[in-house]
Length: 132
Image 1 (cartoon, helix red, strand yellow):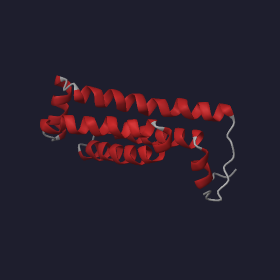
Image 2 (tube, one colour):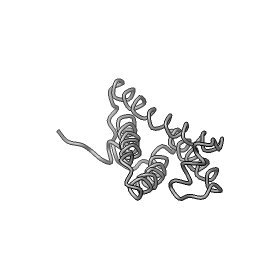
Image 3 (cartoon, rainbow, N blue to C red):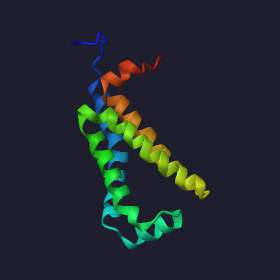
């Protein structure tokens, strides 16, 4: 059953640009989640500074990696982007609460995740058509 929404095929360069833009937040979140799962001393210290108990480090690391993996699977990429947005929103709030100017990093990663997905996913472009 087709939905009746016609999607135009994007130029190959646009799709590749989408993959490149998407790779940046993916690599950052996979790295960040991995160091949480390794429980590096700097991560434990950082969690303390943010007021989070060390017992949550593994849980947050698993969530971070899990959201990213869902984003990497083409069939679930939109759901992954939604999950990543929620995760990154929490990171933004944590930084704003401490008056940390680095709140812009998760904000930029979220924009890049959606921007990259927009460039490489014709169904999303059909849903959100940007006009010239």
